[in-house]
Length: 427
Image (tube, rainbow, N blue to C red; front, side, top):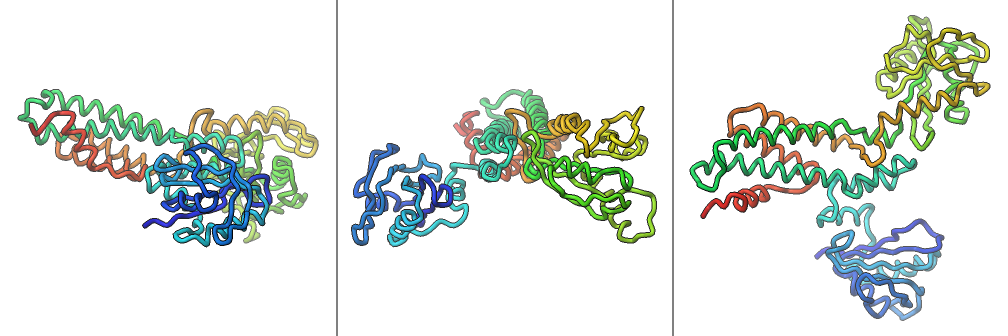
């Protein structure tokens, strides 16, 4: 028998209200023991909670009785909306913990039960995790899209289309002599369906990275020694993150500083000044690390000569414009000391960052989701490029496994159900 679990689901006390959640087969009896009655399902009711051990009053609270399976965990649930003092919470939790069959929940156990009981799939679970960790509005919007199942619903449409294609392929292989099986054009329709589905999956693979959204757009400041990189980094992040000195080669290692600007998370990286050679072995290591940072950068702020830019999409910066003449410079003239040009630089950063992140109403994909979608696309592509029906059917089976990996749902019987109900085979 499944344990019944309980936990404080709201913020750490003290707080105005504390929500204690109970989930499992003993949720109803536990609520009855505390409140001495079960309120009507899904209707808040004010009750005096008493400790079943001695009848001592614990708190006057709003209680909710939520019979399963139509609950967040898929099980019977109860919620106790108590006053948020530490003593109240401790008293209610002690009373629950003393009941037979109840125990404190492990971290993430409510969500795990929701997944195991089919109330959430892996994508919604990941979206919920991102939502809880969101620090910017853009992170919140994208995580909410994932948590509410927008990507999962799209996968579900892929799954239904794939089941139809698999059913047609199996019919063409095994039941070609049956009257209910479609005509000889079935192979052409299978091919067209595979091509259309592969195009839809390929479009999703171009979605932004959730890791970039979560960790921040990686902005690398690079250029020769004494170009003003450290001063500019400090101005962008609003604090003294990097040591500033007139001595060339002061920055010898990568310095990373996160910052949220315009609702977007950035990770700024100051690097060692780039030059062809140095007698300082430590500086040489710093230069190598600077070049490695450039390779992994989402955006490069290049403070060196325009002709030496390491990448064609780098933002060219004419730094220290308060004391250096940048006449004819094709980039942005900026002074981190006086603030001149900083507004234009921030606007340019935000424009470029928005092209790398999900827009309004879009979601971002985690590496796991991207790998699963890529595997699905590979199998669809292989199925679309073969003339052997046996190979095609096998690739479609592998594509269904890729969808199972994306959602955590087993679907081997669904294709058979679709096959027999759709073609009336086996009469």
